[in-house]
Image (cartoon, rainbow, N blue to C red):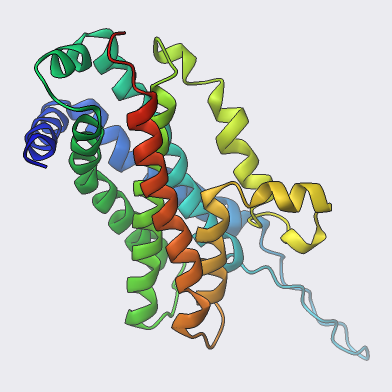
Length: 260
């Protein structure tokens, strides 16, 4: 683990020095959520004027809370995956990973070190996203619920970092990362219950949705938005997300080549 912490400290130092990457990672989610606020306000139904002598018509409602938190989780998932994968590919093209392996660093230590280095970035992303979403949309959640929301988005960000590290082992340059977006990230929007309830999907599509970590994060968020919930309703999805991250850690270390 000593080597992992050494690499983690190096990654943290590198992130601090790369102001553009750091700004993009932290500011981009906030801008997107603010644009979502504008969008949801624009599509809210206008009030229906009362007509004398007629029964008042029911006013259609649009609940932004059903979508904004899952979409916020997806934004963190998407950006963490793409930015981490691109940065790792850049490390490979510069020969940094080769030098680490030649110097005697084990592959599992290299992967663990990069994961440790991104922990802080994932924590900041999750904290900023939750804070802005709660503030802009006036969510009236208990403090315990907000803490659990932060935890699930943070854990999803860690899984996304691990997924980005894993995918980067198959890419020779930054352009090789982008074909994985429609193959891995975009199906998460359609098959995990963010836009359409999974019970309305065809059986094959519903089963395919279990392959994506965003499904389990969305399950937790949907449960938290209910009036009453118990920890027993949450922990299976938390456990799957944790196992997803651990599994990707070992997959990334096993697929990393000794010589690039």
